[in-house]
Length: 155
Image (cartoon, rainbow, N blue to C red; front, side, top):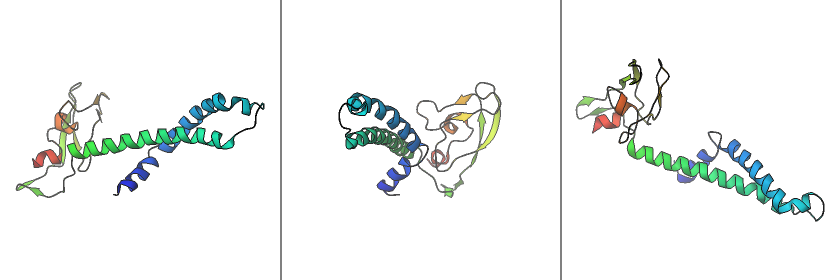
């Protein structure tokens, strides 16, 4: 996907427009009351361009923050967990199931390994504990699972 396409996709997905709109509504209203209060309450003429821009700037800043975070996260995750084609690796078949063991309650459950993404939070089906990767591991399967993710198997 092109960089511009990724920016557009990230800016229109996962609730970004709604959150940015809420930020713009709150921050824009406060800034308009501060900067245009006298015009809004009738003592001077209203400058509509300033009012519109006072809402657009917080929207743009909030969207930029969300998109830049997602881009950095996507780049970081792709470096730690590149996707692996489902094929023979060094003569061995890549294992796609891993036995996840909860360190809190000891429950073990067979889970399907993601091939094209890292799983950074795993919820135990028994005690509802949230498991996260330990420092140095990119996903929960690399630490709590019986088999690491496919990219780690290929190494």
